[in-house]
Image (tube, rainbow, N blue to C red):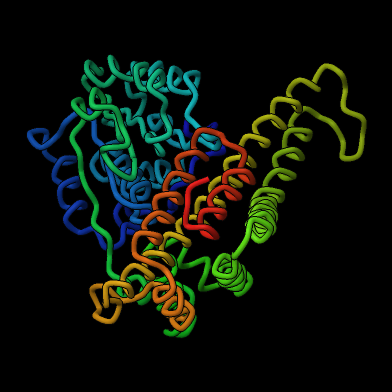
Length: 395
């Protein structure tokens, strides 16, 4: 899949390749040295770091530096915009990266650069490869053409098979502290410090999520309602009701994020094939429209599951706070509560529960996240998890 043809490509649009990389000076230094010095270069890289740490932004900046001849600004802008012919990129919008997409990337990796110094293959979300898909990449990573560079991105090197890890050079990004993220969000959005700090803390330093919380009062309210709802779960009936509310909220959120783009893609396709707005779709092009709709459904499924995973991450932060309070911590800056606004309720829960019960709930939340990755029905997975919250026992 060529970057120029991929609607899934997400990259900054700054002319300077490193200008949008924030808070990762050490990593930038290593990649700049590699791009300019063949002795520092290797053919395959893995950039790891938690969500929001800037993995993808750094990957595209590196690609721009590798592809552009003699600091060619126009070429860099093309790479960062995703339109340069020597950049091939994939960010899956499904739950997993398919074998078909992986094979397309491998095929492109054997083409010589057409304009730039290197051909660069960027694979975001490399952790979403199944074992079979990973195996498609192995030979290409082991014996790439001389001027091809692979850049994989994932939360952790442990998310990839050992056979993949052995063929790449890993660059680990660090997490900025809450105050630094809050400063960035405040400068970018103009929100006051209290909202920026709260958003950075609730997002657990995820820059993109912090920015969304800071600029969307409804998102902040939904998060608060969800956590308070889970704190109020006392019975199986409560578990079913709250699970349903979480799924409805996540579904509405996913629709809000994808519906406008879906309609724009549909209109663009119909214009391209010469169908006027409101006119009947000719039978000859219905297959193209059906393929687009299938892609959009997969994107909606991923968006929903990502939204529910974000809820589970918030719940982990809340019960993590409970454990801290149970151990008499949660005050010092190094271990302060993520959800300070809920402190009275969290203290009550910490006193009412044993530490063992809280840890059982945290284990079940982690298991629920894994189950969702295996396509378990979200409502059933959440109901099971919330029954554990109510009873302290795994169903």
